[in-house]
Length: 320
Ligand code: ATP
Ligand code: BTN
Image (cartoon, rainbow, N blue to C red; front, side, top):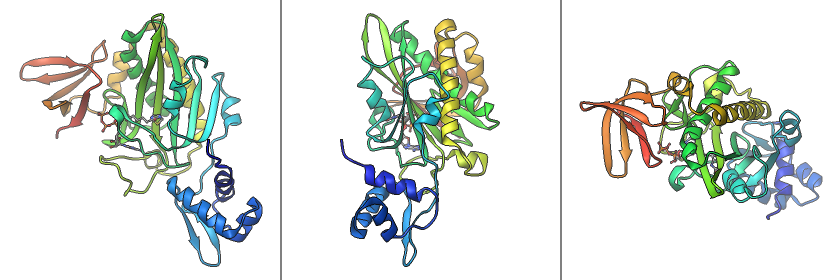
């Protein structure tokens, strides 16, 4: 694995938001100013907005508090790993499902190969967002996985509501939206089966402080800082609330399935009673969205009546 220790040390120093001269950073790290400049370039490639002012040194455009494994681990029973740099937190857990315990969590500051559904890229700049995965084993097997994937969306929205934040909703099957813009995406992946149990890795990417509107994302998106109107987000505490809510909801789902759950999902449906399009490969259906059914399918009303659609290949889009 590549050694990122110098870059991480620099980031830790810079995370106070103050100016630091190349000379002082070099002295701290025991390397030359030229080497510092090279590492700063590497940090910028991780998506961090760091700039240099002649005579003053380097400064972060936006200071951040780094994730702290000990702070998080002290507050939850799940096994927690925080990685500053990783390819994908989902990939990391998928490769470990044979050996890790149920509920294990992997969180990263930066993903070099963050992914969305169907191989799409998930933009994952360092330090400003949340990239989080949890491993869950479902004894009921794959058939129950669709329901579980919806449960996760509701668990996260409810965790956000518990923090006093209103207005975050869901787009079927499980993207988080705020004012019709994507705030977070959830990706549930299966890592094969043994003896009937399904091994699931549930990953979530949530934008927290990502502000640069030129970021190369081909659809409207937002960050939690916009939702709450300031950038005072304690990322460590946010992760802890998400882990606790997920533990509760996943256990609940194992015991009771989708019972009572459809109502909870429909309550926070971003597109309920609104015109939408369902895209299925080269086919499209237009209609009014009527929430989900007990199988986790999305209900669409057309001139032919209400029909349920389900499957990983379906994308829902607004149509007004
Ligand atoms: P679907 O409805 O099929 O899920 P989607 O467009 O939301 O459609 P996903 O695969 O779920 O697609 O998510 C990946 C997409 O999310 C990317 O193609 C990009 O448009 C967008 N995206 C990537 N990174 C981010 C990010 N950090 N924040 C918001 N959106 C992002
Ligand atoms: C989507 O909207 O398609 C889902 C995006 C999921 C992104 C998260 S970030 C943490 C985890 N690791 C990944 O590579 N993807 C998920």
